[in-house]
Image (cartoon, rainbow, N blue to C red; front, top):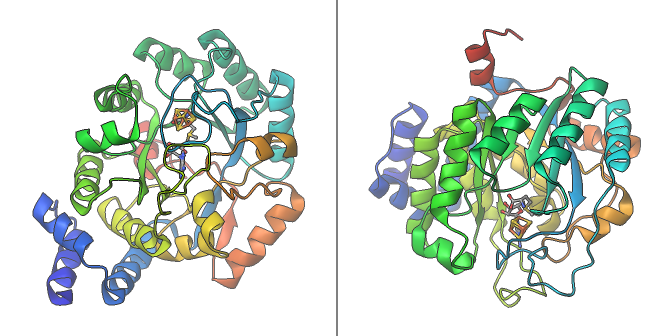
Amino acid sequence: MFRETKDILDRLAKGEHLPASAWQSLLEDESEEAAAYAKALAREVTDRCFGRRVYLRGLIEFTSYCRQNCYYCGLRSGNTRAERFRLTEEEILACCRHGYEQGLRTFVLQGGEDPFFTEDKICRLISRIREMYPEAAVTLSIGEWPKASYQRFFEAGADRYLLRHETANEAHYRRLHPAKQRLETRKRCLYDLKDIGFQVGAGMMIGSPGQTVSCLAEDFLFLDELRPHMVGIGPFIHHRDTPFRDEPNGSTERTYYCLSLLRLLLPEVLLPATTALGTLVPGGRERGIEAGCNVIMPAISPAEARAKYLLYDGKVTAEQGGSSGIHELEASLAAIGYRIDSSRGDAPAWHRRKGVTT
Ligand code: SAM
Ligand code: SF4
């Protein structure tokens, strides 16, 4: 089997667009040999495109209220046991200030779809951050909005938008979400964001309930078609107050393998080693970097907020973006031969489109 896998991996590394059957065959191979070969190729590609640099993003989890009811997520509206919080505008700006002092030059505003934060409030927040830190990038991760709202966010100064597609398979999407949440809407949002000019991030959980090899193959085909600037993937981890409480967690080994495949599919993609990876095994994020990731997103929200922003059980809520957290990260990256790059870390393709050189 490995011989066939190796042949497909070589074709992928040369830039060939693979058909569904080849993705299926790659993903069916669960051998260590396949993972090791994919990782070696992925590291070569990452080193060639980015060197041994890792970009940091300051993650501000600013609201845990959500009108959506994704069955996998601890913040879903149906979870009456969740402790909810929302940060004030001043608290969010204070997070940016602390992050900036630690050298962070991208702020990611992430939250549930909270009706309190209207389009006007979000625009005001973006404008204030841009006024204070004109050279920093603002990334939003606040779910589904009409195209006109995305346009306003962009005009207010937001640069990037993270919206995982979660799964590209229709039946699987229905298994993970209530009927009123539609895969079609997710995809429409992603294309709208791209059309407006955002650097766009899609992605999926690995091992979410009902995910089959052919679902994952569809995810890779979709990512090949969308060609996002960023991709967020991490293992599914169950949460005790969701319908998926008894479902097994996703495999970290599978996640590393998928990260390497993604690096080969989209050589210049910004690929975070997610908190979920770091939650399941110690050193998980570093192994993610070795598999092809080039971004880490330390949380810089206040401790009380981090403790309540519980998407899944056991989430790492320790301080990550303060000076000790950053030093620890620096040391753990140095131990595997990487260093922090403190620039904004835009997607190379976006730079070329804008005619900017780094
Ligand atoms: N509400 C926004 C959205 O859904 O795009 C942003 C916040 S949401 C919590 C960010 C991501 O967390 C989701 O896209 C989902 O993939 C991930 N997530 C939610 N529940 C999870 C779980 N149980 N295990 C792993 N990842 C999870
Ligand atoms: Fe809300 Fe996002 Fe969680 Fe879905 S994944 S319930 S949209 S916070």
